[in-house]
Figure 1 (tube, rainbow, N blue to C red):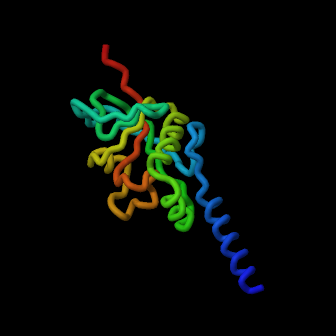
Figure 2: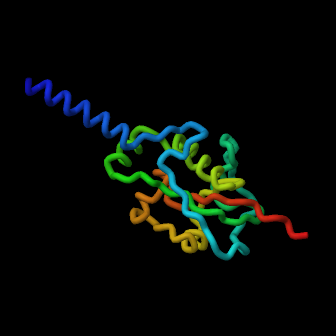
Figure 3: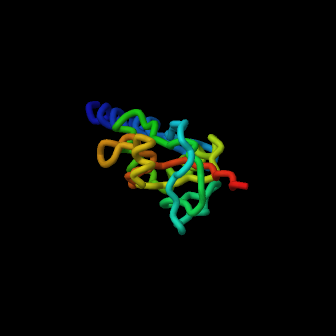
Length: 157
């Protein structure tokens, strides 16, 4: 009898853990990501002459600074509300799975692209905690920088 109680308890714990960290990497869900809108100065954001861009998503994902002017719509964060759920999610879903949620969140807020950056100006302006301090805030487990929703700046006439 004791063995069955232990097995039942273990099964219930696993079921609770899976539902606590539930995320669906489908294209229409934001999973456990959240959004912090940015209001403030929008000129002079850093750019680079070239960039790596993932085009496998509903929006392009820039790994680094893009080569053209943009406005910051906001920052995408994790809304994983408990450490057990986060630990299970980290083991069950990769950053590639979670990127679908990040892109959906950016798209839901009118962004033209997602930018992954460790640029100090952007990190400081958006108050992105560095290192382990910001670990629970990150929507991507293996990226230590800012995950930013951007909109392209209108060309100057």
